[in-house]
Length: 171
Image (cartoon, rainbow, N blue to C red; front, side, top):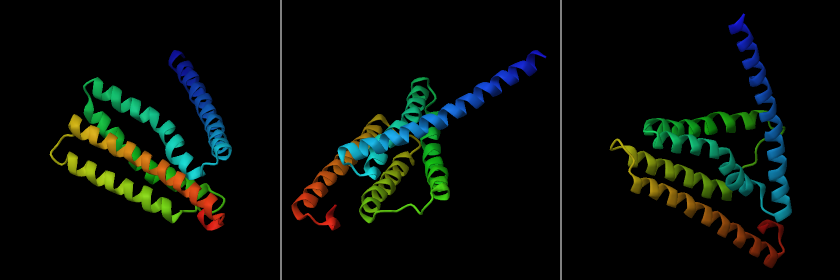
């Protein structure tokens, strides 16, 4: 009977956790949209920068803790697995459940898509020798911060063009 009661308690905790996850995810999405609207930032940029970092924070924590604990292979596997899950499951499920097709802006695809492919290729070549060094890790982090700077800069320029031209094509 003891094992059975533990299973029930664990199932209840699991069910409550999933319920809270769904409710808090809904609140997180609404808050992200609110930030986008309040500051006039395109939702895709808020999704890439704020939502992307917030949802990746647990993965980053697992990778850092794994590496510090002497299990860098878990950190590497977590990084690869998260990309596979994000691209293979999260994007796919969003497309399946969205009431309308997901609109892909050409400019975003060119910048973000190209960056994603390039950084994955660079990471692949860095790992071909069997390891990724601290210096190589710093290179990857630098690329990420460089990308963020490019996104912020291009959005500022886009807003300036929009205000200057007063033309919907630029906004």
